[in-house]
Image (tube, rainbow, N blue to C red; front, side, top):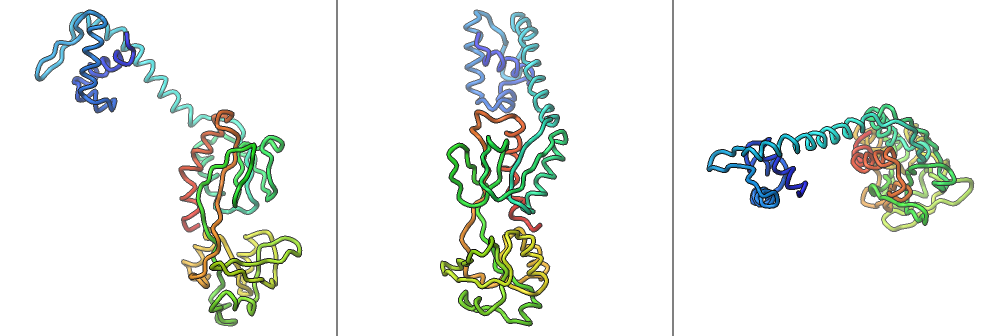
Length: 293
């Protein structure tokens, strides 16, 4: 006996018609009817008496329904149990992400609201991560990723914004072109004494910075003190632009695109907790990375 056809038979009886069973299962009406006929032929008995308006179980159909429906009910119960179990996932999820990556805080908070029994162990670092060596389940990385031992899943692209406060502009004026930036105090993202170039509209501008720091939260603080021009990711600047606390400078000259990626081991090696987290990030990342924070 074909079990798929037997399940269709149960759905027809439960729903009262071929068309209702079709809507429930997503199987075309003609296919439902054909599969029931094939089931009857394989069993050598008639299961349903058909009329233009009604279906009625035969004696054989009633016997089959009594037995097979128990199995279908168990399958339905099993599916519901699995769905309920999703909210009861428990364990530890080991994550890596860049320091001060503010938009991800909201996503992680909402993830734990949905899965309150999952503990997060977060390692904030800019250095390259070895997932196995560092014991990391999923790493969030910015920029192009080449990692031979990991799967890279791009979430989205974004571009930095050049910003300053209205008070700064009133005091110092504002640049009319990228070349004008050499005449303004600027704060930049950088490390140690490395030189910094801003790529604006494919023009490379060497910046003589008053502050160099590898932390965008610090850059945002600095620019809001009315002392400099800086670059910020949109998810750290948009709210202040909307509130008119910051002004987007030289919008016609765009910074290059950055990509935000998830790194993880082959999907065949992932735990259920890791799979759930990856799926949550894929479904929700745009909300947290593009909305006003």
